[in-house]
Length: 213
Image (tube, rainbow, N blue to C red; front, side, top):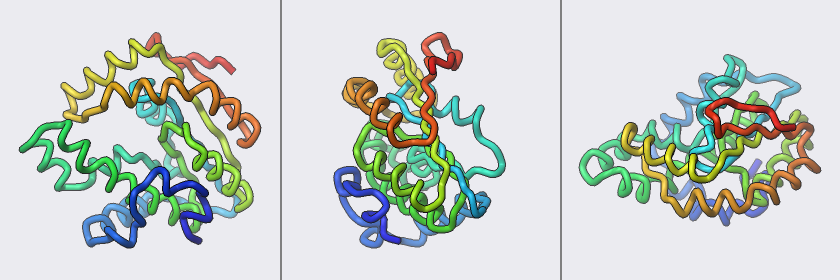
């Protein structure tokens, strides 16, 4: 199964195919993460979506269980030794700029292999693009139960959180990224409601995940 057949429009999200950058370090990341997966005949893929700073990672920590493979591009980036070297030597913004795309390419290869093997998956991603709509459509065709949880948050609170995170974790998030993703939320929520088996909206502005629908 090729990634482009699973996610039409993936070329808008990554700038190269995995095979073009494949190396031992990336293979090790994928293999280590896949080793945590459980596979079954009736798997589930749950996508946790929202703008940066909304609380996706915290929500995933609450929702994760031993039967689901956690797929997060930030988590993939954290597994790449050279990313940490660049952050230490040149700063968080430089580290993000250099390694965000390779981590994304590796992350999508991890996702492709996990779906091919029918793993239960918890996917952390903004979700505000057509390629992820295609992912949900095609996952259903492959026998997956599909769910999307959207984590909403007031934009100024999201800004405060990403700045705090950068100071504490040395993980940079451009402010423009928060703005761009926030503008797309409502449009894509409606799209997912027509595709996924279940779409649920939460608000995290008060630091609690309040279910809205």
